[in-house]
Structure formats: C-alpha cells, structure tokens
Length: 428
Image (cartoon, rainbow, N blue to C red; front, top):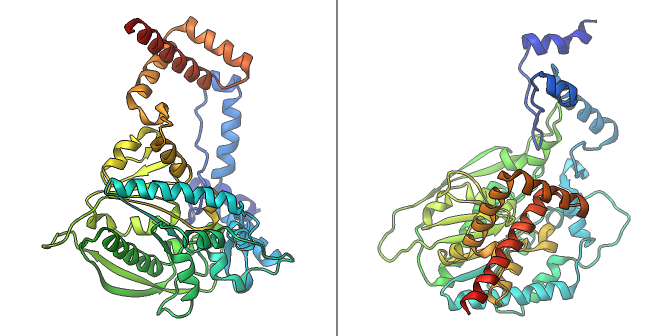
C-alpha cells in the first residue's frame, strides 16, 4: 500500500528529486476550470493529459519501463533507435543509409549536382564562394556494430555523390570518407559510441578544415582558431545524445572522450580578414556553431534545414519565410551546404532548387518579394476584421475542404494580383 501511495506523496510533498526526461518530451500543462472548458470537453481532455504527464515519479516510471525493455528484449523505447553490438547505439535512418535503402538514383543526384555547379559558378561571378560539405555518418563509420540484418547492401547516395562530384568543378570537403579512412588513426575518437554526431574533438577538426578551405578558396587569411587544451572526460552533451534520449534508469558503461578547449581570436591582425558565412545544414553544424566560431567571421548565420534562421545578430530564431533570402545572400561571402548521408535524399532541403530557380528568372514573389508578402498579410488582417467577409472565406474553405487560413491566403493573394493587373492596364 505504501508503494501504491508513493506517487501521490511525491506529487504533493516531493519526497525526492526526479531527473527530467531527455529528448522531445514536453509535459502537458494544467487547465483552468471554467464553465466553457467543462462543457466543450477541453477541461476533461487537457486535465487527463496533465495528470498522465505529471503524476509523482512519472519520469522514474518511464525510465523503469525503458530499462525493462532493454534488459528483457534489448530494445530501445526511443523512437527510431537501434541497439547494436556491444551496445553501440544508432538511429535507424543511418543504418538505412548504409544499406542504400534510401537511394534516390544516379539521375536525381546528377540533376542536383548540375544545379549546384550552376550556383557555384553564379556565386563565383558575384565574388562569393559556394562550398559543399559531406558530414560523416555513423552507419558507415561503425558498420561492424550494426545488428546482423539479412539483407544485402546496395548503391548508396553518398557513394554516387562522391563519384560524380569529383568529375565536377564544385568545391567540396568530404569528411564522410576522411573519417572512415582515419578511424582508429587519430589520437581521440571521431565519433561516439552512444551519440549520433561527430565527437566534440571530431567537430573541431572539421571546423579547422572548413576554415582552411575558406582561406584557400578565397585566398585570404582568417583570424586563428587556437587549440588551448584538451580535457579527457566521460561522454556528455551530444556525444551521448542517443543514450540520453533512451531515458534509462542506469547508464551504459562510460565512454571517455576528448573535449578540446578552443579559443577563436576575434582580433584581426595585419593581412587578415573576416568573411561572412552562411551555412545551410543539418544538426551536425550545431556543435561548430555553438563553439564560438562566429567570432572569426564578420557575419555568421545558420539556416537549419532551410526552415529556421539562427544568428548572433538575432534576438530570437526566425522562420526562413520571414527572412529576405536574396538580401541575405548578398550580405555573405561564403555559402556552404553541409549534410550527413541520411539527408542526401533531400540535400539542401529546398535551398538549392530555390536559388537555382531564382537565378533562372523563375521569380517566386511569395518568397523573394517582402513588400508583396506584406501586402498579402495586411489584406488578410482586413478580411479577418470583416465578419461577413470572413464568413464567406470560411464557407468557401468548407466547400473546397481546405483549411480556412489557406483559403484566406489564396483569396488575399488573388485579389492583390488582380489589383496589380488592373493598375497595369490603366497605366497602359
């Protein structure tokens, strides 16, 4: 009976401190009781979610459940996680990439590289540098610890990208191959046992190489990246992100890794310059971005998956749709697209196609014309303020079976375009 009452006692008296869960878990918030929330069912629905996520020892119960899954079945309860041999941890998508099950075909890869080659040449004429970077993948780096699957390896995206890009004039860095070729040859591990990304040590080696590549491609000198010291510690942060996301009661056997102490010299010496850099990349860039590398650049921006924009200049993260893309391109000297192998099927996440279309005259006003977007948003606000007008939009959305906001945007855009056509005819 005491055990049964423990969660209730913990909830009200906090008998012991409970570790928060790692990963993408946000506990449901409580709901205020009102007459409206009771009769529309919101109170009951939200209250049930709140009690489910916040009862005493909830997190401990989750960890116990996950620990039993590991002990009894050697299964990870974290989404998409695979426990390999000797407890090496993988995200399953990296195993798929290693086996080539996500291969998109040579023609698709060649088409993407043709667009990249055009952009590289276009940016070069604008005195800008375009650089492609292939980040390493854990499936390729540690194939010996992948569970024994009864399937044959096929052609992979990274192998074809590597083959075809060598035949082009596209500037690129292939960390993917370099890491595999140097596994066991470096002083410290380049990829962790319990994490997805390169180790902190590995990411700093990559940072050094990227800076040197920029210097060579632009024939400049950048303020130094100084290796002050290296601390040898138990794996932490992103070096154990998969293990942390499994939310177990007990941790795996500790892994010892190297953590460099880096100093980026912000002061410019004679003959040095600070270029501005724009990185379009996946999560492999977070370690570099968070290391303070922005200090050696005039401007340093990171467009994460070409969805969100991050910069020391911003107080808050911005959505890409709220960024003037063309103006930002003009403000940067170096544009880099970096991806690990699992994201090569969607390499560039739309950035390459967007810029290719723009420089071919396929002008997407909704993306490249801030004034046009502003006029659409202003008209949408006017429509929302008109009850009868908004009712008409709602009825039309219901007939077409699309969201009301989508119908509102379509109508506002159409009206502005029609207004422009009428003005053009009257001027002629």
